[in-house]
Length: 383
Image 1 (cartoon, rainbow, N blue to C red):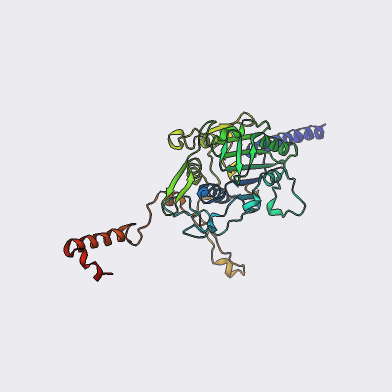
Image 2 (image 1 turned 90 degrees about the horizontal axis):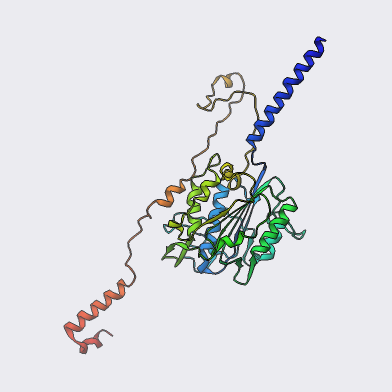
């Protein structure tokens, strides 16, 4: 009888403990995802669309900084502005007029470039309908535990987005592609962001679950450019993505900033257009969804029963060497590049050079003084 009582008590304690562990795990992994992916697409060609490439590379740089590796990013650029013959600084793409922040960098991995950026290839990447010969780097190898960020920028209108100025993708085609992804269990949650004119029209037809969408402008509104640069001769970014980049620079991998904060990026006073968002298809409350659930990466967790002191550095004594044990070298993380300071700082002072037209004006003044002094009859002595 005593043995039976002990067994009942033991089973009760174990079941209570398991429920506790499950509750804690549920709160910790509340998003339900185990991996992150990003599909970043610039759909515009030609030099005057420089800002669309800079938009995409800015988001690319941010998601990499927050932990998503290149192996989980599909980057599609319709034109190579870094190697364009009009670029006064080859191998660079800047997102700020101070030309201090090069978003092209030394480690950009472009998966689709130039004429590879088509509506067909984009839809094939999303749905996984790619030829067997397609390399792994050009595939979206997501599953039903993947959180996916999809960012699009280019020229658009009411219900369509242009690719290469030669073809279009409609909001119906995009909605059907997302439904295929859901039916094929290719995502857990999906965040769709588009920076284009009348961007809100692109998410009007969405009907798949667990999908959240943001746009830079409402139907009937233009999405405006920002940061004109006289040296390059074009605008460097679009307004919405510029302020989105500023917002992301304050985010770190452990940040608790949620999607409601992201919805406030670039109000009409800054964007001129009216940004929009749609959350009715999303199952979770946006206030409980961290920005890093989509812009960051899932961190590996090592469970230990030992107590670790996180407040003071670990000191290694020299006794270990005397006892024949190898002394381990300690490592520490260096501070990240303070990009937010770079963005707001003043441009560096450059060597002085005559402004445009100065030399021509100087010669004109010399000739006027000569004519006034000697007259036109002495002009032959000059030429």
